[in-house]
Image (cartoon, rainbow, N blue to C red; front, side, top):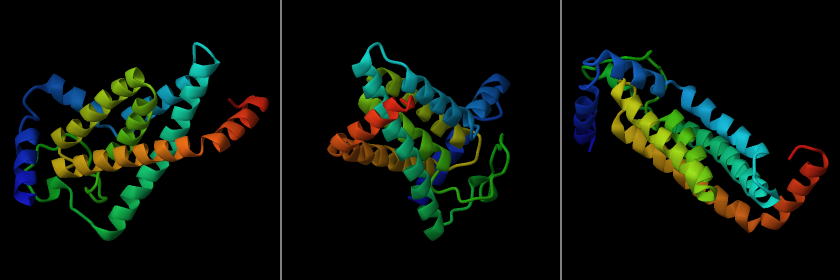
Length: 193
């Protein structure tokens, strides 16, 4: 399994360094903050947007699910890191490194887990917005391998973990909808929602 992971990494990362415009694009997408901050800005916009009260309520519940999922995805990665440290590919393989050298564990990808948790939680509530965010999450995952900071298995586990967490959070929020509605009603009275 490790040999397959390394071979796929070498193939994807082998594409780097050949076309400067593509390298520049993937370096931007691989940034730890660009896609995460962009996703959070989409969540902020959805918190206040809705064509009617029903749509706004649905959007706000999706944002709550995505926010909780984001935090739990971070916890998932921290827990994995406490038990397993995987060196970054640039420390073990000949790599076309186009990015700074992170020193934390490569497995699982923290930023990928977070963007997939946000994107999938949004997708479960709003297919159009969620699909858009999932597309950028996939680009982010691919770019992390392309620039040489993650193995493919790292981003796959990060994506799967983020999506599983978002699915479970969404199901729990649905099961607790009565209580969520009470909290949302109170938030509206305080002009927070």
